[in-house]
Image 1 (cartoon, rainbow, N blue to C red):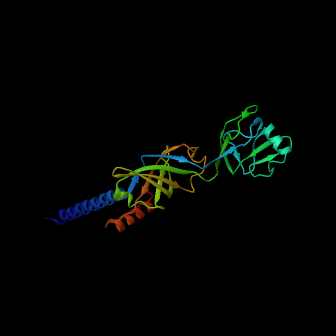
Image 2: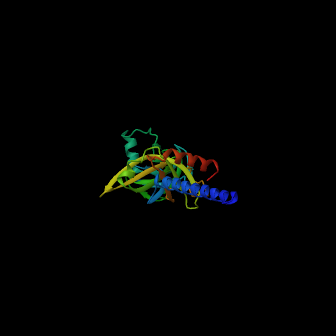
Image 3: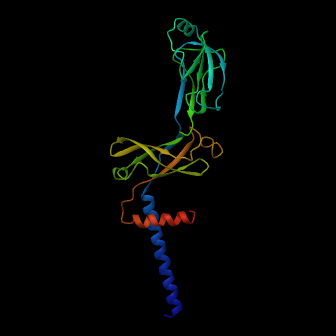
Length: 243
């Protein structure tokens, strides 16, 4: 056997060993991850409502408008409110509304955010206890994701675990597990995870970051295997080369 043949044989062995090692690490990496069955972007929405029936006389916003806490949403005229004001039966001071002595009530935005729904218009009658609008609070966007786990995999799920949110255009956002709720289905765990991320800003990614957008989520599970240190090093290498 010549040295050239020996060298080719050695190179072949090294390549095969490297490929086997890489595939082993990739398989171990995938075993340490779980993919969602269904996931949707959501945010915290706050209701704007009234305890008094009346007729809407002015609407200050439309759906999609940005508002600050305390900004006017709409104004209604209420005979029952006017009576209670005359009889001094109501405290006119409230962060939820402003009043005048003629029975006019202006409802105010409960928080900074975006008007996500508006269910009335000028001239409409509003019933007692009706919700007339919703304000989607700023910086409360999260991914609501459902997973199905085997018991051994659920045991490796941790709060604070890294997660990757994939948008419909295949762009990704990095986040982490903020909350976990679980229901049992025979011998499987159906877990609902709340994935938070500072990069989930409403309107970003050409408008894809919005409540109701369908996404997919992959969450990292705790790696308890003997290859865990090697897998971590492999992940660091992939991150450094941009993969």
